[in-house]
Each structure stands twice: as structure tokens, then as C-alpha cells.
Image (cartoon, rainbow, N blue to C red; front, side, top):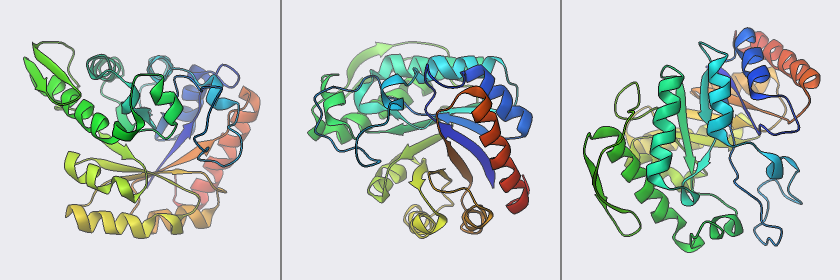
Amino acid sequence: MKIGISTFLTDQGITPTALATALEDRGFDSLLVAEHTHIPISRVSPSPEGGELPEKYYHVLDPFVALTAAATVTSRLLVGTGVILLSQRDPIITAKEVASLDVLSGGRFILGVGIGWNREEMTGHGTDPRTRGPISDERLSAMEAIWAEDIAEYHGRFVDFEPMSTWPKPVHGPRPPLYVGGSPAAFHRIDRFKAGWYAFAASAADVTADAARLRELTGVHTPVTVAHVGPVTPEELTGYAEGGIERVAIQLPTLPESATLRELDDYIAVAAASVGV
């Protein structure tokens, strides 16, 4: 099992370059970062963490800018989104950003996508929250067409463009490794796009049974990356490994550089003691 880091990179904590260098030096597999374009001040959508939204949501850096910086100072570390919000993104621009970062990183990019939970945020982008699922599906389908075809076109309810060409294309095949974020409600989307699952869990018990159910549904060994938001213990990491989880991305709090490095040293020590990282 691989051990990575998921985090909110902001203007208040460790920089993308310092974090990426520290992760690669310590043998972590990957850096996966969150996205929010803005947070409306008048908000009724409940926070996924409960209570008021932490400050990191308001200060998060653009994922493609931050990950490009991370990729330039590393050679092995995988860089990815955990997750970008398709319901808020233009598919042509996003396809260009994904392919560009994949090329600049030498094929080290992982694409994690989601439909979003903050209804007020997506409304600011002109998206009706009631249709965020089908909008996201069409945008992802259109992006796949752009990556796969020299001359691509797409005609749907929400996305419609005539034959066009754009480069670059992803390095390894028609698309980077794709993970769909969310609860088991996203399993139909994962099966449709032949993607992996980007799950959020506080313990191995929260996710391993669902991962097995997903693999029964898809009929293949669907890769699962878990953003682990609970205590980091040898027992939990061992539980994920025994449950067939491909990667655990430990949720790193947004902290200054010195405090971040201490956290990473603690995580890697636990991982070495449990799954041999």
C-alpha cells in the first residue's frame, strides 16, 4: 500500500515547493490537494466537517498552480487533485490544465474529481446545484474526448462544442489516472467512467467494506485511494492494507513549515512501523 498526503495548500502554511521536497525526501508516494475557488459569505450548505468552515477553505491555493510548483522541484512524487470540482469548471480549460500539468510533471499527475457540496459556491459559477451531477458527467466526458482525439467535438445538454483541436495530450494514454471522489453514491459514476474511488474516511472500518462492494459492482479490482482524516496509527494503516486499499493519503493540517515537517516525520515513522514504507 502506498502512503501519500492530502491537504489544503494555502497562503498561510508551508509552501508547495517546500512540502513537495519534504515528501519526496521522506519517501511519500503522492501529494493530493483540495480545491475551492471561493466561499460565499452567505452560506446555508453545511460544512462536511461540521460546524463553521475552517479558515483553510478561504485561503486555499489554485490546485494547478500549486501542483506545478510542486512538480518542478521533484522527480518521483505523484501530484494530484483531491478533488477538483467539475460542476464549477469549464471543460475545455480544465482539459488543457490537466494535460499541461501532466506533461510538465513527466506523467506524474493524478486526476481526482468531484461534483462539489457547497451549493452557494457552484451557483457563483452559474451552475444549478440540482443539475451538478449530470453537468459534471458531461464535462468529464467532454474532457476525455479532448484528450483522446486530435479533432474532438461534443454535443450534450450542458456541454456543446464543434470540432476543435488542442494540445498537449496526457503523457500515458488517453487520460491520467482518474479517481472520482465521494460516498458510495458515486459508485455508478466510478463504474461508468472506469475510474478509481477517492474516498474520505476516519478509519479503515469506514471504507473497506464499501470498497469490496464497489469491486463487486465493477467486476474489476477498482483502485481506491482514501483521504484519511482520523488519527494516524499502525492499526489503521494495517487495516487499510488488509482491506485492499491502494493508497492512503493522510490528511495533513495546514501548518507553518517547521510544524509540518514534524507532522510528516511522525507519519512516516508510523507508516514504517505498520506497512513498511
